[in-house]
Image 1: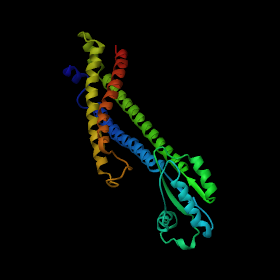
Image 2 (image 1 turned 30 degrees about the vertical axis):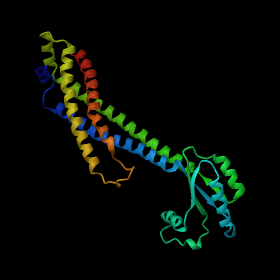
Image 3 (image 1 turned 60 degrees about the vertical axis):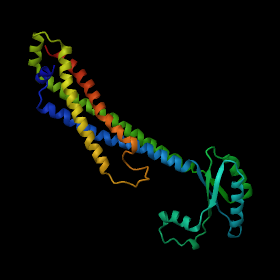
Image 4 (image 1 turned 120 degrees about the horizontal axis):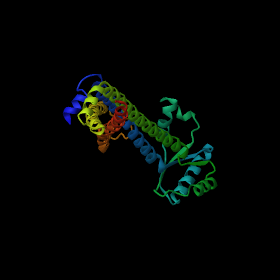
Length: 286
């Protein structure tokens, strides 16, 4: 079988280089697309975990009533099932939040800032509609914000990013199959005389196709291994966001095992494309 494969599909030449170089390039891109997909999933989980069980209460009232309404808000929160804890943010903490938008030299004393209360919910959470009604009755200037308005667009963005990376992986697979098909068609067409001789000595098309596909699949698998190795090495070289970072492009933990599937998938795509092309071309060789 190996000798026949060598005759039908030469070890060198443009076809051989096209197969393994194309497979290596596609595997390299597939590693980055896979990293993007997994990073988007981590990002969505991180945003969900960070915002899902947290909320804020904004207390806007005249200065003379601000302290009283803040105490009323805290009392309502302490007696509400589903609220784990609540505390009033300090002016310095509010300044740190606003400095991102307004700069570090923000004159807090000159601004009529509302009082902000951080709230941590339990896993089951409170009756938010009932809590809002209680707050409006006890502290008319209080507004309960469970971050839904902020959380939904962020999660939708992460989901769309995953969809785009999945589409990229599908396109990479399609381009890989096209490259293998073109190389297979060219290699078989250039060896039409060898195929005719093999048929004269009794070789069937299935036997010839298997010998041919075997060689093409091995070349594609080799290219997939090379491209995957280069892609993983590039991932390692990316700057780290810190030991506790959950976002950022790259693999984490057991996620590093996922790229090892890329050469296998490349080989499967190459086998399918080469097999389909082989029978198509062999039917045209007479």
